[in-house]
Length: 123
Image (tube, rainbow, N blue to C red):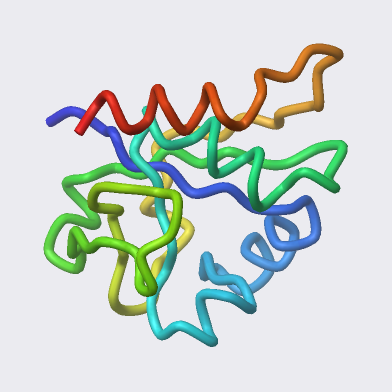
């Protein structure tokens, strides 16, 4: 099965996940589910929610381990982002990760308007 669901964490959040064994953020706890992204949504997610971070950790999840708790939902309230996003309901175990990358901010950034347009065109 294709592993197309991703989670972005700050370095601190990743360190906490390695200690606790659970992948969760303050936002996830507040909203009651784990926010995830499809591959085509990652650039906008990084630009909107991790603009202040110099490094983040990108996790690719093994869908065979997470599919039973995934729901595909549109953002509420509906904002600039369109389409459904994967949300994980339950405790997301760090062992559900199939790949891990450390991403560093690059010198070039694509304008958010272009990223949103690219995301919209995939729906």
